[in-house]
Length: 329
Ligand SMILES: NC(=O)c1ccc[n+]([C@@H]2O[C@H](COP(=O)([O-])OP(=O)(O)OC[C@H]3O[C@@H](n4cnc5c(N)ncnc54)[C@H](O)[C@@H]3O)[C@@H](O)[C@H]2O)c1
Ligand SMILES: O=P(O)(O)OC[C@H](O)CO
Image 1: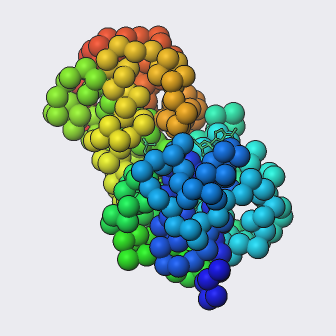
Image 2: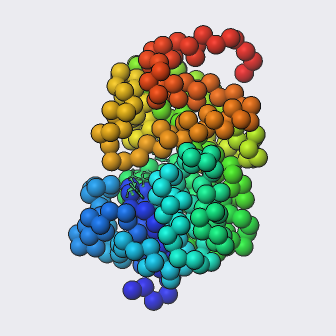
Image 3: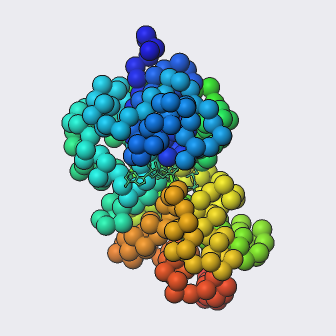
């Protein structure tokens, strides 16, 4: 056990929770990771691996796993890395405490339309909340490759508590107090990445993908501003930065879902074949609902919703987008 550095807890043993644990352990600190599946707990503790969600990485022995959320009670900081739709239920099982929760999941809660921060506030009252989001493929972070993120905090006091525990030579957080903006960027980019994957699956070329990224960013910005986000956050790491990453690579589960749709597969079939999460598939319908309530036009998001629901074929969906009335940029 490390003598000087407090143990950090990670809630969620998927690719991202495991990669964050590996990154956190890289300065010799102990990390306690809660995983949902007993087999993942066992594999981390006995084989120092998580082949179910992050294959090919030998985990630092300073990472221990548990299936008991109560075991995290003494951790100095807790990173929350469950899928968005499971977060509220998991946090309700966490013992009461005043340790900071750093929310690392990207999505909007389907049942309520809540951002993660609102769901977490209700599920774990009394805990200070921060949001970590940005262009972060898990396998690259686990391999120690340079990565920068937005760490949205309530204030400088919270930042001073959390940032030193998270920053590493190759993992660089940037400060903002715009928690809403950091959340919205991460949630909306997943839906837009599905659209970019469709373009790839249909073989429509690089011009079309760049157009979708730019017009998608316009949708993200309209929605974010309507929800009180700051433009600087939306054009930063957690917004535009993550949008560019996720819209450019089949390493993205959202992009690869879209690619499969473009190739003619049904969303339900693609998702049934996976154990990993494509958050955009869950966020898209609730994002559409909230955007309509707020009077925000999001035609690309609408198109993704129609595709996911199987209401339209990919080629028709693209044709309909291109046939919209000409307008100002
Ligand atoms: N993978 C990445 O590169 C990455 C990067 C940044 C953010 N994120 C975000 O992190 C969050 C977690 O994604 P991930 O990639 O680590 O997951 P993953 O796709 O690798 O794994 C799925 C996770 O879901 C969990 N799970 C399944 N059923 C559950 C249940 N009933 N209750 C609680 N947990 C359950 C599994 O234990 C596993 O941890 C998502 O919101 C994702 O958008 C992922
Ligand atoms: O694989 P995706 O599409 O969930 O993207 C992972 C991360 O959010 C990229 O920042």
